[in-house]
Image (tube, helix red, strand yellow):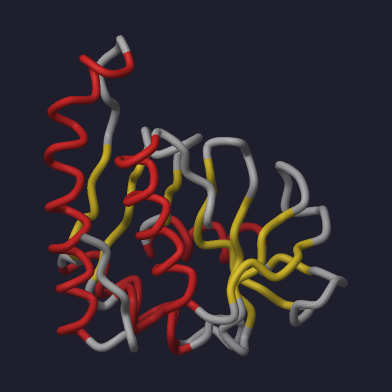
Length: 177
């Protein structure tokens, strides 16, 4: 059963984690019988001390919206390698490292020009969140291409990700995020 988030408070995010984790258990258990090869990593990790420390550091960067910091204060990372082509929300440590090394991503199409790459899919597309909280998707497998809106905010993006899991389990097809 898909759970819809209404905000990014800790209670809602933990419930989102529990809902997706409950769906992933049976999916992983039956994956090899259905697809003919063993499943990869499919899990949502709750934030530990290192994740929360990195989230606090991210909060001091002007390109990082409060919604991403709120997310990382509860969820450490998401790995859904077998849902469609795969979906991955990078750990806050990885986001901080990339932001420090590469700086923010820049886009000229419909998104704030400054955005923070925080997720990817198995097809090479990147997801970035701009300062207003809009989630944008790269038009190619690079930070140097244009990004277009994928979700109006992080709550909507997480709901699309949840729907992708639900649909993949039901039909073998994903693709909402």
